[in-house]
Image (tube, rainbow, N blue to C red; front, side, top):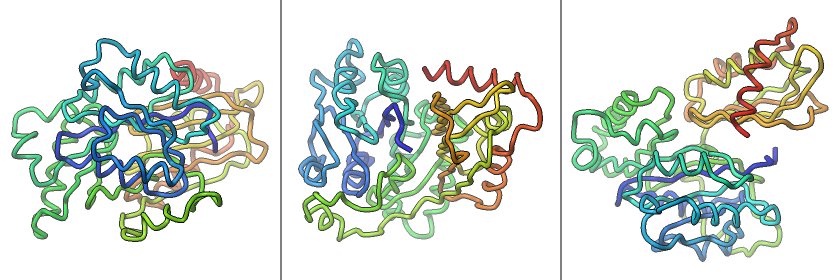
Length: 337
């Protein structure tokens, strides 16, 4: 499902948490064309990304940290360049400096003047070893948890084996104090499944890519826990109320929901592209799919049977005209625009 707007993912984390390691891992995965906005290339493996064809025109923002920009013009310029249709990027990742304010950066993207972008979530990387000694030292939970859609507890392998579950549970509990929707996952050396972050166009490299792309991944092949995915197909125009109910209240563990569906407006049938990332709901108008369309939920882990029942309920045909449900769906479409 190629989307009209390119999702822009904010990658944050305090210095030393491992966000650059996470980014490097994502750049070495096949199947997606990834644009990158960074403050300083530093240790980012840009050469590897260029070789694999996954980075086009990376943009370095000058003049200090993103949180210190006087306005959004530089970031918008970068996003304007990276979302040009000829690049056909699947996602743009903005790696924030270690002291950047995730909330401010998320707002800059949400209200960007670039028409071809949409918010793709805020991924916050946490150091499993040092987090409670340096960042979360008690009191109110860190404010960054309120805007994070995915919290990555990195370096979990450096925690004594008997303590890992307790540390992960403690981070999750603190996140829950600030957000009921953010998903928490643990990683080793930043090995995050890209399916949690963006869509992949294929399972392998394009035919014209250099073989070094695969060699770069051999050392850590299949080295991250894979996200679960549940998909269902619609047999006809769906109920707008049931669809919006799902978008507003996804099943437990479902970090992302995406779909292209025909919706029964009560008078006619319209097509919609829907995307949910954490708490963010994006709805766009598209031609109604001829095959009924589909819904996909992605998360780690998912209770597959429970999630499938929720998705199947959402794609059931509308039993009667549903003007109120259609108004709710249209509201999300207007907000997304």
